[in-house]
Length: 105
Image (cartoon, rainbow, N blue to C red; front, side, top):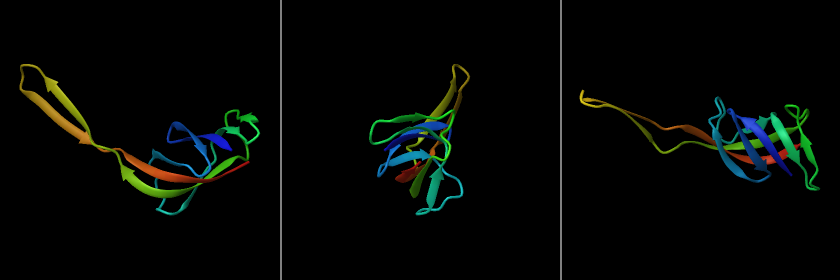
């Protein structure tokens, strides 16, 4: 069974047993269960497709938080010609790694 869920302003295709990196989930500790209830589309084992309007009622995706991590550093450079103006900034984006346990309809 596969599903498309919405979390963190993005959409992800998930299947049972897969691991994916999503936007950081606030107030969730490592090893705890997470439930995603914004399921947009479901594809079952017999290739039947269920489309939500906008979400499928009573459909959930249960997952476990594996780890919180950061991406590689992104460097931002501002530069203005002939004025000796240079500013460097950088940041590392926060992510959560989750393992999909089961898809419930």
